[in-house]
Length: 176
Image (cartoon, rainbow, N blue to C red; front, side, top):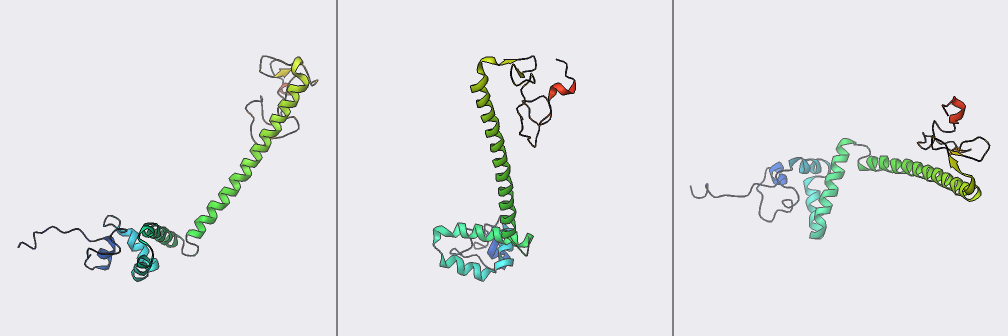
């Protein structure tokens, strides 16, 4: 009865899945805790326990945790997408990065055009500028108002103008 009342640590997820006794030197125990049974189940389903064991024994101990995390990520991705696995996820993320880079480049170009326009107007007409009641610049340009989109249509609404891009607020019958 003394041996049955002795406390022992629960087996790691790998040993529990493989239905074997988890020994003190188990290669899986530090990386597949009993609280994460699906982690080992996925890795086993894709790579096999024998291959994972060989891999862990061949690499240095300080690299094992990263290796197991990579195997677990690849196994989960492979189960979700059997054809592409994590390469499919990487491709989606790369496309998103390229799209966001294009948007950032376009926004920076718009900002540069607007900044250059403002700098040119400040240098040429600094002494003649005044503002009307709607924070529009008056006193030059012949139209009586400043259009920040002057010849540069933007693909979005400009909060500094009083209407959609390229629209002259005075042509709408504004209440000036």
